[in-house]
Length: 241
Image (tube, rainbow, N blue to C red):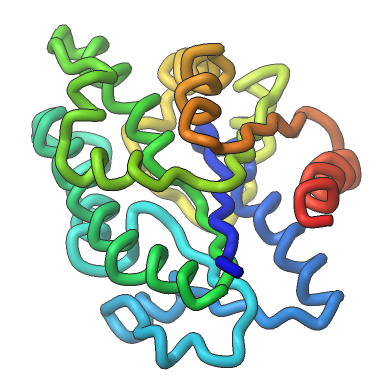
């Protein structure tokens, strides 16, 4: 038996972390143990070894990572005012992704751990071509897929891809005003989020992942927290049954 690779991917500010926590809280209520890779990296400056995962059932992690190239992406490359080129950013994401997949995700799956990730190559397929288009640069979905790290990622896509959707980007921005963190991310402008949401909901994106064997599910995040909890857990319970 092999572990399951689950991804929650969507626009910034839509509440991916909240939805993931709802899944993790549900699993903890069933006695499952969760290893938080993000917290580990912030404390240790690197990814955990497989040895350190012993005794856990679910491995939670994020893209980009919180160490090495991933931390550089977060702190320097995608902040507002960044001068890094579209290609440099795309290449950095692909390298960080390959390192995460080869060093942790794929080995963990082989050892029967379940992996839940905030973001994946799906984010690159949405954000980077849009970013390039807004800058008047030709950098297509095909260019993203041609990067070595992304070829590696597409060789073994998630078992389940959950995409939160919302009626209005304005609603997502309004709700997130009181959150404790401020990413200062250039991808959080309203107009960019609206275009990104359209791509996340597009038929071609869904079909690309389905053609690789991934189950794609959309979760409505427009309602209350209780509504979102019901929606995400309905998807989760049906999948994990």
